[in-house]
Image (cartoon, rainbow, N blue to C red; front, side, top):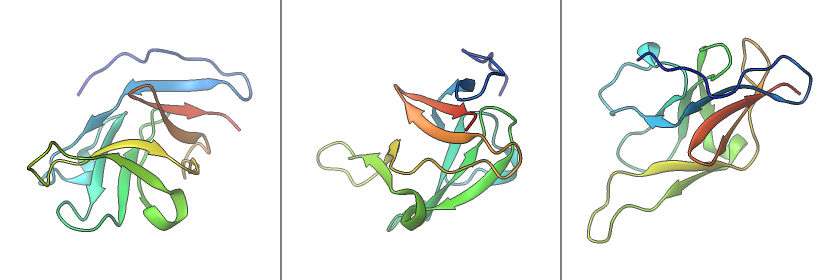
Length: 113
């Protein structure tokens, strides 16, 4: 998926990448996620964590719910799925570029620490 970043900067403590948050289908291979895409770990069932594609560098890694405190939008009344990532309690660092990844206003955002 080709998307243009909304914000790009290289100064410390500022946003270095921001892409619209896109939830990948549970059958999607996590290795193919593009910047700004997320995939729920345990597609159906209790939340274990999320695969996040860093908005700054595109590196994909899995992050556990216990460590990050993910919040999800509840599904529509009368349904159990889909659940959508709406926030991250403790933004995790990207394992490649070390940017902190968060959800802000419907976008996956990377900030330099």
